[in-house]
Length: 159
Figure 1 (tube, rainbow, N blue to C red):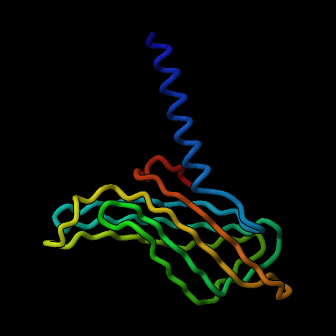
Figure 2: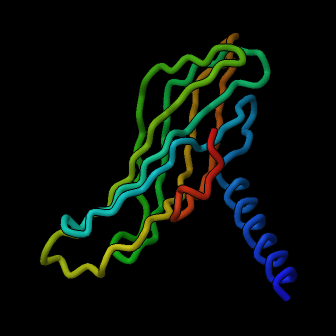
Figure 3: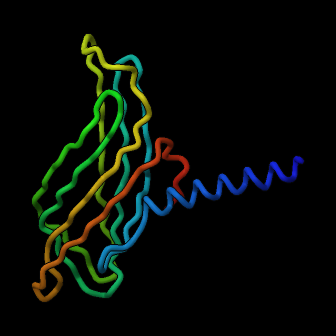
């Protein structure tokens, strides 16, 4: 019975790890991407919850890339803050052939005193990220990344 229970528990743990791996790393065109350094923190007194992570991009085809726009939508779905929030950032981010870029993200939810919100829950935000720019010969480039983050960031593999 103990052996069977241990095997079953091992299967559940492996299944959870596989689920989060499938939602926190992948490929899009010439980019392999992953989530790194994920962490979350709750401040019950200040009624604030923060989820931070780094999006790591790695160029896989040996072609320099230049990104000029990043648009991302974050969906929270918490009792205190359901819905989405979209941001667009303009810039110039150069990614060398076989190089790596790191983009930090932080998502914060607050429940101001007297607002009547329900208690804060652990966050598990979902991001839809679109990077646009050009490849080395000015060919247009569009990279789409969809990631769902776990409520407990410690379940993610360390990169």
